[in-house]
Length: 194
Image (cartoon, rainbow, N blue to C red):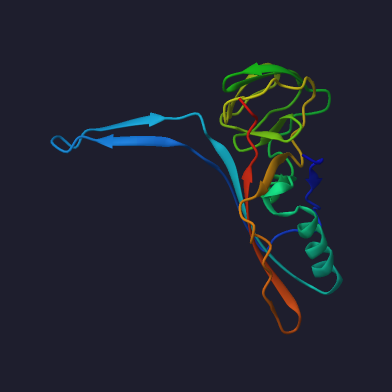
């Protein structure tokens, strides 16, 4: 696999969906209507973008998308709603570890807010589910950690998730006068091998 491309922030979408898709199986008893739900371990990020551009920027987007080679290539995708943390973690905070659905952060001089994203290793983003800080804290996150955390400075701005296009036809671009192209793009997180 070739190195992942980085989605340029200049290619800001007109609309975006960026969310965690859970994987569950449900069984409803036909006699009592009692339901049992089993959570599986396949939670992943999904992203859908609507991009409208014309002129040279449209040509640059075409070239970038072509370089992905459909689902064969990978891209580090930001969530444009959360490019900066709403909390104020402060300078010097360090991500030192984590397991399950908990990260360990030391030196947090400010706070982390629910909905902030944290980069735990290249291409892995996790959403803070409960506010935390200041101090040395345990931070509740989703999805569950699937890889070891990369210790280092706490990254909460421009967090990116490793994704790929979900279809070979994913870069179709209907164009209408005055030469405005429209891309409806769908991406899925590239999960680590188990």
